[in-house]
Length: 485
Picture 1 (tube, one colour):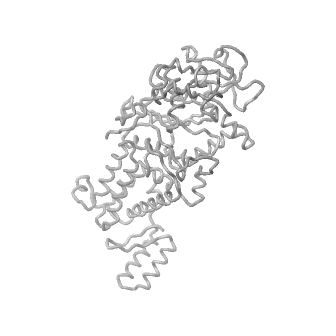
Picture 2 (cartoon, rainbow, N blue to C red):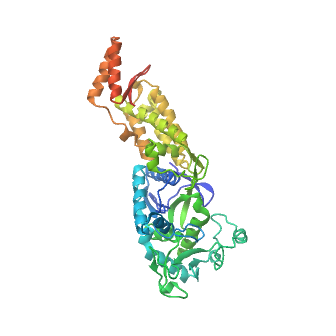
Picture 3 (tube, rainbow, N blue to C red):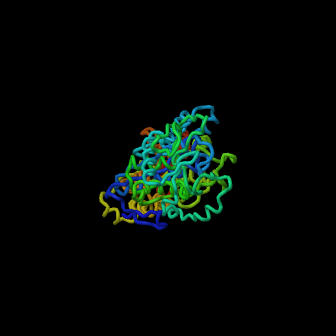
């Protein structure tokens, strides 16, 4: 099966070809751990979880790294403002280290709650300070850096293809530069590799600047620029060239453009062969912002009665390349859709396996829905992670299954479809729909017998007893089935 991905680098839908057969190296830009992640942040990680799951379904051995930005991300992408960790520390009257530790744990717990495939490596920026300094040293030796009063900068004019990735107009950028931007920079597009701690101040997170990185000055304390960590971590944990780099579209013009410049200037090779970017998620048609209070967290969703699988369903109803819109009405619809799927999943406990081979399955049109859907689901994901199409395929298959007599549904085929849904989309249908007890099954049989003898009073009594156990009985023209309430 051929995987095709929309590659920001080429602007096209490219066939995926890994550097090494059977092995894929992926880097995902992780969170800046200074506050709670909101639904917009989490939607990105759910989409990239589907990327990993699709690669695994295709038989690849995936090595993935997610970074944790615990230093150096300033409130302005233009290398101005306060470090977000220092800002968080002041807000909560803690140290930057305490803020980073707490919100790193929040992020890791959220990944587990959302059933995201864990990366092989979680890399904290502060654990890679020596590698970041070595990268600056490499760039300095090759003539790409210069020093001004507030730090060491990358000279974008020396990297001739700087504007290519994001299709930037550098002349327009220079003409439109605000008067208040750092006038010491050679160009508005130049970016900080290492920022100096202002004289007379002390930061929670700072390190000595090696003398061989300086043009002048001594005993200067400093900290890395935001972009530097990703380049250093990729080279240290994966390779100089990787297969896939993922992130949000807001990373394209600055963060990823700068990553490419410093990595490729230092190493002389392409940083990544494929770049994937997800679009923004709005809330009620509005950009997520603290002032509006619309940056809902996972705990807030749970407090309103939604599961993490409900939220996953909402996200996957969209396409990673298209702008999404979160509303609680949409989340309710996703919750109902998931409940319908769970109602189909419990059918596996009420049927038996009747066919053995794939050839047998194709011979009987009444019971091939699951078998065909399993193949079509994986094909949809291989078409640029088309989750919306994958969900549509599942809906159509489940609709046919629910309207088919139980005797005509093959348990093995249904089980294979459910396992594929769980492994590729992460819904945990099997884990959330256990079988009922033998005692409950006996109540269902007793009710069926009461109906057969037209003992309606007994039948209703047993229905109520089952309902008290959270079991709903549905009498259809295709047979009697039970579901969870």
